[in-house]
Length: 325
Length: 138
Image (cartoon, rainbow over all chains, first blue to last red; front, side, top):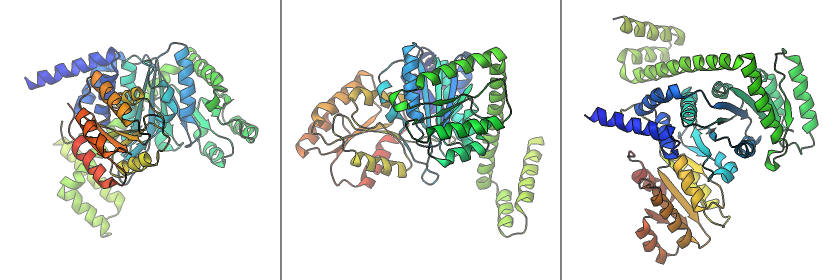
């Protein structure tokens, strides 16, 4: 009886979400964020209705102007009557697990537009946990009928690259005058973006930076898509039309080449693997507290009797033995 | 909901109206963050409409309004009215800033959970929000 009530509630939440109800979408995202079983069931129910939205990921160092660029692009897309979902991810404190989410500030002019849904998400520290919740949230926005989903995440490190895995098109936003960005380019982020934006282009070092980026790009392998380097001054809306145009071009390109479905296939495969890995990690972590044998093993590592790799192998052996039983 | 859920308290810290003094709001935002909450800061000069829309989209458990302009008797009732128009009854509303003691009973009668004036202890605010907004939402 209770189960039926719950399932009816879920269906109505799913129904409301698909009808574009913002509160239903907001609550659904909280459920997946909180790792609530209802959230996972909801995604299961809605998944067949996803895949329609274009997902664009934005990454780059803090302060490079990602949120401002997102705001300017949202304005352009709304002018074309496309509905937009924005998912902004900021880090959680590793110490308190709290977070201060401030990306909304730059999107204030869109708060009251019914065609724009903005959600701030904290990374919540857990390794891998972030990208899981982010993809689920993007799927929910997709099911809610958003034409375009903009994912935003700070940084150019490995964890952020995972999130960008969910996007059809990846934009790297840099700013002139920061040696860091060139370092980031050298460190392998070069293979990731489909579009590079040099924001704050009123800076005197803009030309130098664009030249350097083009130089680094020229060293890499040439694909069928040439990564454009676009100058913007997002705060004044300058160059943002060029970014919007590049996004459309890239979209058309991957659709034409058939790489869109290839990309999505790869993204979804990664998603399944990281979800499985995330859950295994969680189980393992729980077992440390629950399993006396595991604790003993760890104590022996601490006492330098067993090395960490051997202990890890024994834990895994133990797990597979349990599963075979 | 099983033990596997990881419910976090989400708080919108907002500056309605025209005053630009956000030091208090930032201190509160920082204190709530340090207490492990997720704080969505909206920035300055927000209209009640923007604040309520933010609370909806961010699925907030609580909204903290910081007002130092003296316009609290206009802005706060409007926020409460808009929340109730949307049928939102499970969002805790608190007010901080320069609120004369005489206005506090009226604000509370409207549905404000608590008013924190200058010199309020941040720990007290954290405890209040945790206790009142930490419950499971319906």
